[in-house]
Length: 227
Image 1: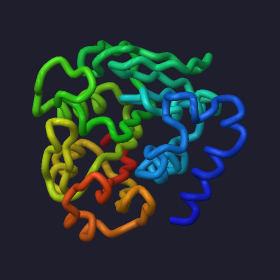
Image 2: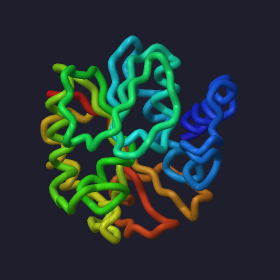
Image 3: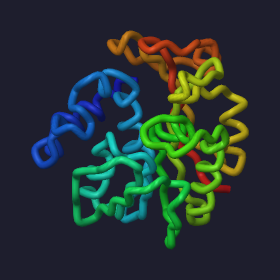
């Protein structure tokens, strides 16, 4: 995991910080966000994303500066979220909308769903109504708006299947198999977050046994290609 930590350290301490500081509210700086799964999710995106120029859709972007970082690197980025997004860039377009409600007129080379799909249809944030199938609908829509052989980078809580207080879903291996059945998985990693002080790579078998707790949970990171 060392190379991943080196990558994220460069991202949060180098030139990007000078132009777009991390402590202005969007990603809450080096708070609990970066002491958790973001520590490995962000470098996973940058390690696997296809080279620019590519068109990207970032689904649920409100608490992330990743779309701005990608825009600065030459990608054409569209971010969509029901909440506000304060940062701007000439290569970035923000759509304030429910992803499932918006009619996209163009297809994309890459779709990012970084710790977002697990909230779809639950009473998280500003969801209009409870829809227990909204996460699967979102994956289907992502498939439909990707170009042929388009890339999908997806991360989510993983372990013993459950829903946490109508806030987020914890997925298991069967969920991933069903949800991504139209995609070919290229890379898959599992990490465990311990007390927001340690993030360590673990096996799928180890991850499957983890019962979510606020300060002890696991995540799955997937790089996939549209079949």
